[in-house]
Length: 505
Image (cartoon, rainbow, N blue to C red):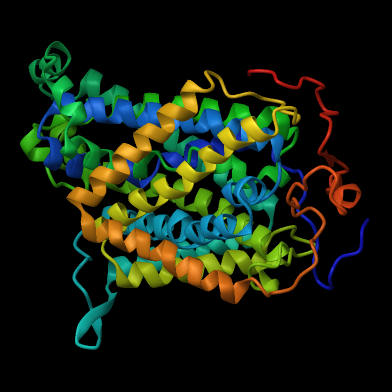
């Protein structure tokens, strides 16, 4: 094995298709579908428009998954967008995407999911014990709910710090439980629940919502939906740890996204069967309200506890995926060197996991759920749009590169994704300028920090998924085949696993 810096091991290919698929589903099915439909109803005020919004958001997510599938199969390395943008646009855009992942892509969603978990699990425990004021403004809030949210983040961070094997088993168990609960609640509610069938029939017979699609409010509502669908790219972050990545990364991204679209539409149909639009508007704990309406208050409280347990899955999935980005950045010398360390016995980027957990805890104590929601949805759109632009650039500048998977429907698929996200970004700036400015401020701050982190030294670590060099560069022979602990080789010029370049899965 190639020598490592002291105390540093390598990432191993231990994750199969099943675990990669559950990671995608777990990352997507989390806080959003249980909490955001109430906010969407405030914006749209129509049951038909609500379902249409979830469908359109799902199609946008699917076009993104199709695009990322090509990039993930081409570059099966740790880091996701960071790795793709480093090859397509260079180190600064790559660093900014990693910066967004650290602050917005994982730490903030972990905090939002933990707050939602505590909201469902600690009924009546939201009144603060203590509020710390900074410069006369309430900054940190301590309550039973916030401490419960913090505890969940700490425990799951330690689980994934322990080992990939333990983290994978916990993740799979939580995800299977979550999908089972959603199906049981949805099908049981429609079959046995005391809902309004007439109201539901009216949703599917009226076409009044079509005109809302091009409205500004619909675009703003898609910000909430994009948050709920975020996570469709989860498997891409663990590219260095997925077996047969040229096959399994595309399958996990695409199949996982399709499954989640179906689950989301089914759940929202149940919400509309159980609750009138006025009852849904602005509600955060829709699962509890729908359960109480369908089966009575006692079942509503039980649904709240079940939803809380189900939310553990998405927290676990993000805790697992995010640190691979900071690890990849540290391996390239654009982040603190300590975060490139992989424990030799555990094969986990432990310090990167702890960093992410600490940031999530700070956000839990200092932000409200809705503020996090708008901030996350807008800012993540910027990173994903640039990544898909990179896919188009690679098709134009490097058409002969090995592509084990080619995006279905290219070039229409990336164009739809880019147009849809541009639409969301523009309208969100018009409707929610403060949240949009916070997102842009995050990017500007990242650009300033790039000058600080850029001089950080560090030789590439084997297994990190070093960036792809251009043909003819001095390091081509050094980087053409990066060793990975499982005995695989990431060969830049051939696909030894399948020999099926250019196949659509």
